[in-house]
Amino acid sequence: MGTPSGCVKNFRRILARHKRWKYAMSEWIEVGSIEDIPRQGARIVATAFGDIALFRTVDDRLFALRDRCPHRGGPLSQGIVHGARVTCPLHGWVIELASGAAVAPDLGQTACFPVRVEGGRVWLGWNRPGLET
Image 1 (cartoon, helix red, strand yellow):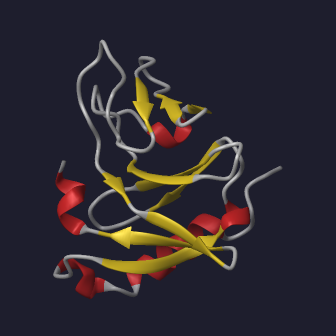
Image 2: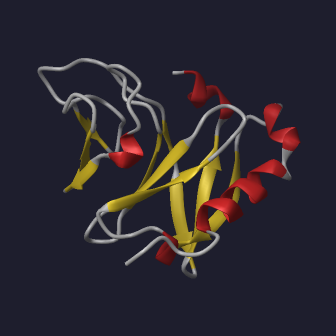
Image 3: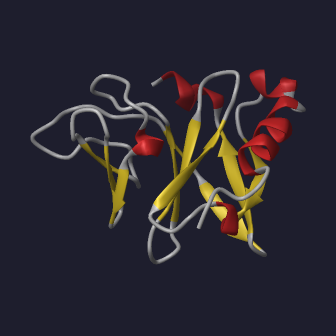
């Protein structure tokens, strides 16, 4: 299964229309279809504050994390999804998708965001302060 046409472009266009988010504390934004995200894979939502990776597990659970490993900033969206975790492609750190926390013995955490699916559409809970972690 290849990249769905226009998936990342559509996500970027949606976010670009909402410049007022810089001031919003929290709101839900529609970012695409669940079918745009491959099972055991990820897609990126580009924002002015950094990329957010949307992950889909083999059993169709969705998670959203800042696309930056807490170790050295590696792109988590390019890592391997296994269960409810992702392994960073740079140095092999394992990150919990539900919390963004590194699995012991490693220490660190990346920001996580609420995500939900309604009628096959994916909604991202936008919480700008979470991007700063």
